[in-house]
Amino acid sequence: MRLVIWVLWPAFVAAAIAEAIFFTLIDPAQLYLLGQRVEWSAMATYSTGFFLFWLVCIGSSLMTYWMMPDVAKEALRQAAGERVDLARRQRRQEEDAPRGGG
Image 1 (cartoon, helix red, strand yellow):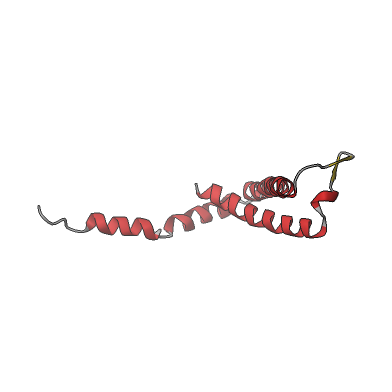
Image 2 (cartoon, helix red, strand yellow):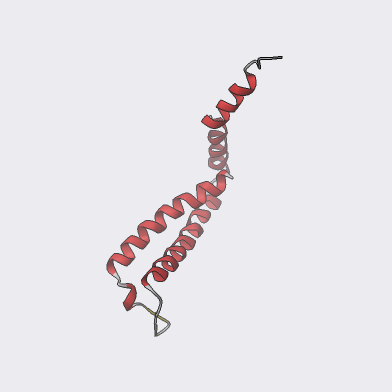
């Protein structure tokens, strides 16, 4: 699950930045695709553009992860395993607490 987070979250942020820059410079009403004018609403164009940028960024994040040395991957896994999740810690404390009314 952490791999999914490590890949999708940075890709999401990068896609949001890419879309903001792209659509700041280019008006959706003036887009052409394969020589044909795109006749979609602005919202549909923004949404489709975001998902396309996200797919490209996901590919980039995956390639980065796959090309990392195994030592770096293991260090990431170990660091993620040592991190205490606050929600899990609270559950453990509740389970360890003595139950009254016994």
